Amino acid sequence: MRHAVRAFLSAFVVLLAAAAPGFAQATPIAHGNGVYEIQGEPLLLSFNVVELPNGEVRGHVFTKNQVTGGILHSKVTSYMFLDDVLLVAGPLTAAVNAPPQFVLGATKFYAFKDNGDGTPPDEVTGGVAPIEFGDLTIQQIVAIGGGPPPSTFMPLTAGDITIN
Image 1 (cartoon, one colour):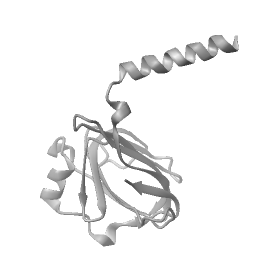
Image 2 (image 1 turned 30 degrees about the vertical axis):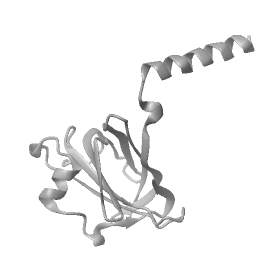
Image 3 (image 1 turned 120 degrees about the horizontal axis):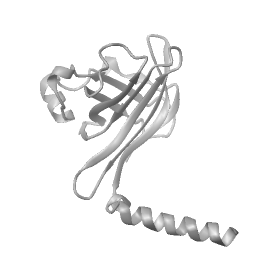
């Protein structure tokens, strides 16, 4: 039985690899998880960003407000660096118990700072573009509004951000 399970799992892994060509060569851009606070409320954060060989960007950002239970999830479809800050953006794909400006399909954007030593305080900030603006890349958001002001960054109180 153990050999049958191992054979099945091996075949399944090969099938997955064949079904998703290019992912094996994806270039990791950044990933992280942790906790930060907005208006005294702790938010859990988890994200990753990769670039595929064809230049396509994939990833996600997930936040959960520990007080209200509010959840935001967005895809990452674009990124750029502004000095030592990683900026990402993509469509909002889930908004549960969230403020009204978080409309599905609106462009959610974040900026991440990695202090480089594997310990807090890495930093994060973010926002959302009005749904009327349509699907924006991070390059378009920066062209419209500039980079994030340093005063808007919030330190992680736990966790780590790694920018490759």
